[in-house]
Image 1 (tube, rainbow, N blue to C red):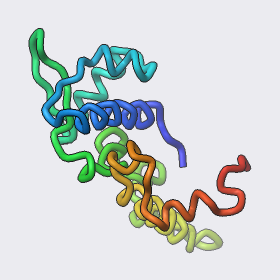
Image 2 (cartoon, rainbow, N blue to C red):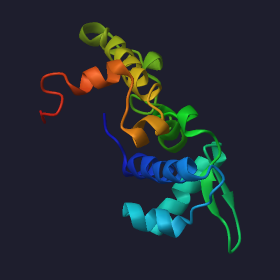
Image 3 (cartoon, rainbow, N blue to C red):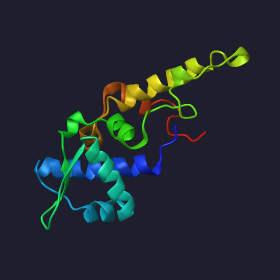
Image 4 (spheres, one colour):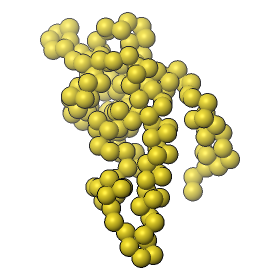
Length: 155
């Protein structure tokens, strides 16, 4: 799986907002603070926050006292929500959904592999919330994956 810069930065910004939400659910955080604390270019972050706002993940308020906050409880915002808001479907094959790609001959079952891959990604990304990441606590089966032999090894 390739995690785009947009998705990576797009996860960091809501995690800063999750931290603020834990302190005070209506607290607004300036975009400059998010950018500086996470090393995200401000202009890039503005586009990300706009997409997250359009998806109902983030709310914004203009003005001197303005800023950003989560628009939902962090326990109800999942990694998959953020990735889909920024990059579209979790798994695409040349821009198409895996079940829409036709294969023939020796590769006729390749689509099944892509569908299984999407299901595996969904299994993790649709179950891990912003609150889970902020707390460093994950569902048991996700934690088990982290403990599998070779999970942390580059291949």
